[in-house]
Amino acid sequence: MSGFLEGLRCSECIDWGEKRNTIASIAAGVLFFTGWWIIIDAAVIYPTMKDFNHSYHACGVIATIAFLMINAVSNGQVRGDSYSEGCLGQTGARIWLFVGFMLAFGSLIASMWILFGGYVAKEKDIVYPGIAVFFQNAFIFFGGLVFKFGRTEDLWQ
Image 1 (cartoon, rainbow, N blue to C red):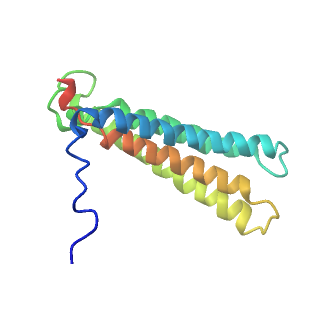
Image 2: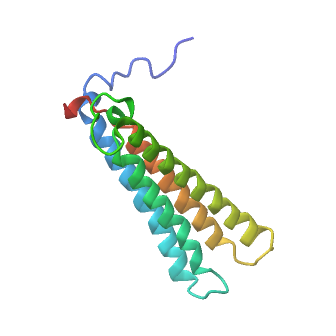
């Protein structure tokens, strides 16, 4: 039994190779923007400290710093192909990337703790701020991954 989409030849008319960096960059930007849009929405809807503790914004700030750290080094620098000088060379680039991923995972885990420890376990009437903090960090995290691994560096050289 053949599939009904076998006759569809869409990939032949579009050259995805040249547009991969553009598509990945736009997707990462949309994810990053959506994360911050969600948390801004929660902060506007619940401006009081009773409903939404404003110190929870620290998770999003740390996720943003991690986003920048992860994407500040190229894959060539981590592999040692294009980076041999500087303060620590290839080792420094790997340490920088590792610290960036630690911050990204840490902020994602902290946002889960805020959601479940601060809103779900306490059985608050309003849970949306906790959900907003979690989704903000999840969108920033996945945006960073798309921007880091969705692009190719072959076009840069």
